[in-house]
Amino acid sequence: DTQVFYLGKSGSAKVSQVTGGYRRYELSENLEFTAPSFDKAYKIRIKNVPSEAIGSKVGAKPNAIKTIGSLLASFKSTSMLFEVSSFYGGDSANTVPSSAGITLVINSSDASKFESKLDNAIEKFMDKYSEDFPEIEYTYEETDMPSKVLTRDETDNIVSLMYTALNGVYNKDDDGNVVAVTNIGKISSKNAKLKIEVAAMSCIKEFLDEI
Figure 1: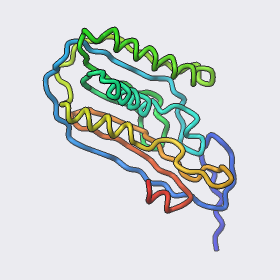
Figure 2: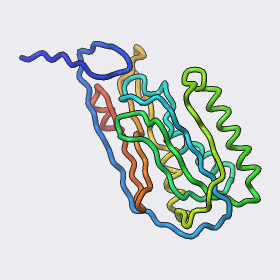
Figure 3: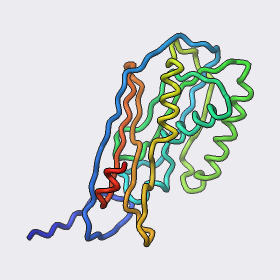
């Protein structure tokens, strides 16, 4: 017969008569590398995204990890050939990642096409978020060639995973209230191992089970 009043860190204030569930997932896989087939490397970075614990407003801010994952998917869908050397971002499953970065290797003959696609993606991103979050930076630069890159199969798996991965508002009730959210909070390819940390929150157990 206990009544509990919980005060937690959140981007908004609310009172609920229903407690929520939380689940954290860590996806882990050993990675296989090979020598680069192409000859020009780029480092792409997103940083200074305001980070806070996930909640009902999780979709209002960009997720830097998911943004780069979607960029890779768009490259693949338009037959832009690339290889992945490294991928990093975020600090923990339950916080919106403040930054993310990736190093790609491409054929130098595709550099103009590659940069044009990147410029277009950055312009669309900044048009959507720069007014509300002027501190965000989304940049790319040419960098030294890495000694190794992921195999084609590994790259395809990561692109597919990042494209289909759930992030943001998962479900709302009939009144438009957010009742389930997900967050890709961290990714790392350090030490030849892919690690991705994901969190899910909901006040309805069935949604947690679906997620």
